[in-house]
Length: 238
Image (cartoon, rainbow, N blue to C red; front, side):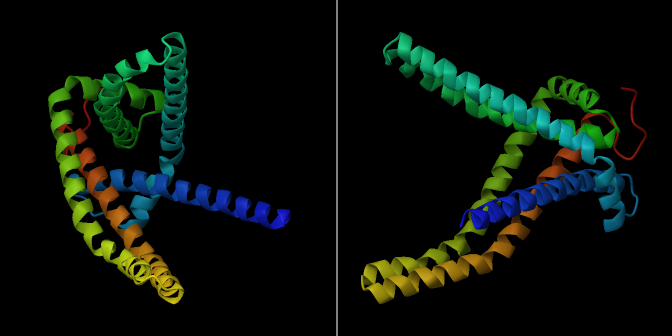
């Protein structure tokens, strides 16, 4: 039994790494593809894929740095919350509510900075740390347009997500119907049908996620180029 469990765990890790690598290459290829298309060049899948591979390690480095920083922030937040709770006997935790509300816009700002950093790495062929600096200069120098773009994408993705989710709500109907009927056969049949529908819908969900990623990556790539005056022309001096 243990070897089987270990085998599935190893398979899961391998698949996770493969999907992670493909995701990084795909995002790099999207950024490069939108850049080429914005310059009026013809973009093929092979060329975009090659561009994604060339930027692979830079984008991986950027993601790892953000991941480590995120873990450190969460650990510090948890330890700080625990310390405040112990020192104030739990009363001070009430004052953390405004802080938690503040974390929402902070998270959105960080997410925007992450994508700008990756765009900078591919767009201007910069190293990891130079990409951080370039993205920060773009972010702080164009805070208004970046905030507006973030809000537009939140609204757009939210609307698209709601519209796309509506058909998938029907997946739960057989299971709900089975539980309402109440018999064992109805419950088992309803759950089985819902699971089959869910499995069948997974490819559609993957396609939809890919479309959303393409939409947001393209929007930020074009935004970055226009904020830095690089649309269809030479890059400015960094």
